[in-house]
Image (cartoon, rainbow, N blue to C red; front, side, top):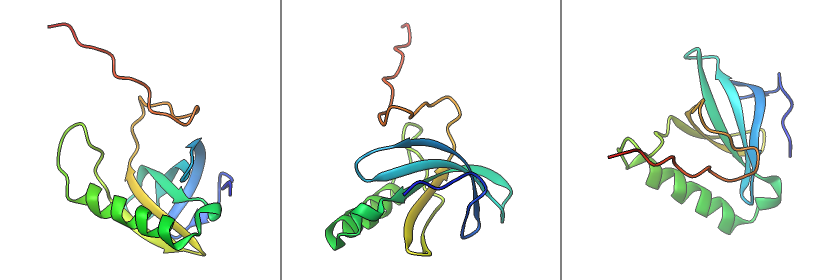
Length: 109
């Protein structure tokens, strides 16, 4: 299910599509409560299987327990209008248009 720019998902206003994969889609959105840009990952409607929903919830809980500079912080998890989502900071230097995370650039020692 693609969300068009301008669509509201609870307190979030979708502004652009960032990518898609097997579990769902990722969008850039505006958190209207806190006035910040975020990335929203939604569980695909094709993933309405209870096992996939449980996996999505486990992923959100696991991420929320972690605190490391190389792991994205989880801001919110929710369900709105039949759509499950997680909300995290937008990483402007990341490009997810091909559905994968680009490899890190090695840093010189």
